[in-house]
Length: 91
Image 1: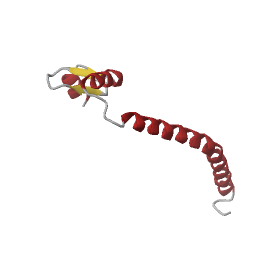
Image 2: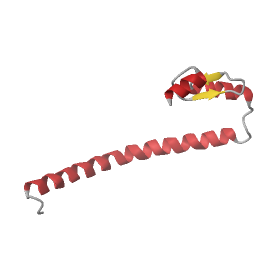
Image 3: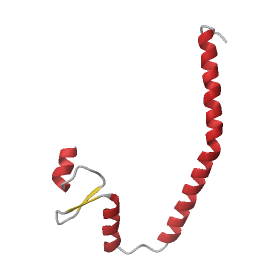
Image 4: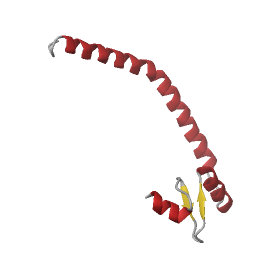
């Protein structure tokens, strides 16, 4: 696969965008810059971006709140596994 990618774009990294004229743009920032030059941002895009950013922040906060719970569950599960090991599978 990487050989085909290299043949098509001149690079073996992704993301890569091959244009109709045969040239290629490699790298997320370069592709986004190209697309920004070629296409106007649709109506409502800014509101959508703000909504997505809010969801990402909520997800991060949620993960931070769940991390201690997950660590406790992992510890308790380890305790159970150790106990089962010591009792030859009988609790």
